[in-house]
Length: 220
Length: 264
Image (cartoon, rainbow over the protein chains, first blue to last red):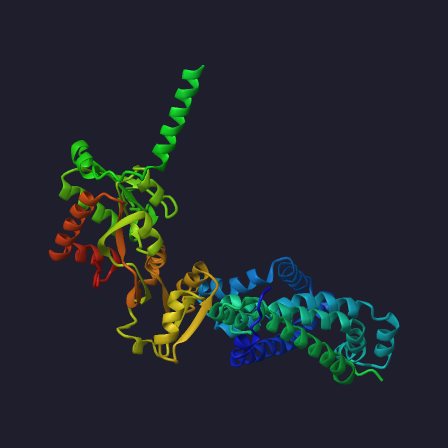
């Protein structure tokens, strides 16, 4: 029977806490910036010029059809040969933003396309500018429609941040790796971190589902 | 019929007796080497800077040079046999080679099956960095960034000895660690001598060189068990080479550092 020794792993709580903090920070930054990027790209795919549509389309297809770890390695190890050297944290956030942006673009575009024609016509007849129509009439209900899908994608990106340990970012899964290679207690390290990810995902989902209807797509 | 049964039984007893006999360790390698005027030397062919193919497709490196020295001093022709870590001891035991000269470290399990000469070259983990950066002691590491593979000896030594302002970036394997250093995401690299040599060879634009020693674990030459004549002769040659500075010169040429104290 395997003997568990969680005390040794939990004694490294500063490292685990630091990892949790970094994972949360990476997720917060990339969720915000990635959603904004996704919205902008969704708008571009629907209302942009032909060139813009093509460019955004190419970006979305490239990011959605390649693994996240490859995108991360490309940004961290590949860009320096073009003279662009990014720090570990910036490389992580950039990769996560670009990744979420592509998926969010498609999710939000689906929400936007489901807008009833009547809504837009009514807004135009009230002499609203195109920007006002988009930001006040079309976008909020669209977001309300696709909110569960977008929240899921944000959680997926949060869990995907575990890959960032590969470029030495000291987030939660890297904390587990380091603890297990020092204490040789792999089972216990990874159980603790799995539970932490689970808790973080649940909290994040609850937070976003609370935040959405109140601040982002205020639905009366 | 009776005779046949008797002879079969006798034959069986004889073969069992032979198998049970303690294996006779012949001590005749040295004489046969000198007689046939050539010595078979097991070297690494893909492990720079110890044994590797030079640009002219000839084997070169610290180990190869030392092996050639031994052959020259014995007055025989050197026959290099490329070996790998798993097959070198079996090759020695089955007489395919007479000496193992291929970054061989000494440990208790190996001592049970082969004999070791005195040490002839250092094998080490160290910090490597660009020529423009001056690192002479652990204190000079303060405020720098270094790439190291997680959970290795280098990782442990750095944790114990390096100043806290050194930013240690830990990667999963040698390949990613070296990639981080070559792409200049970190200023320094901490790894084994062989890995660093291969990386520096393939990436001359980084201008990296040896900086600071982390741990030493020298190379020994492997000899078949019981070959005391050959062992003593090789030890003589190595001790003389140590005394007259030849081993030191080899170490400086290929490893960029002195031999340090080589244990007997």
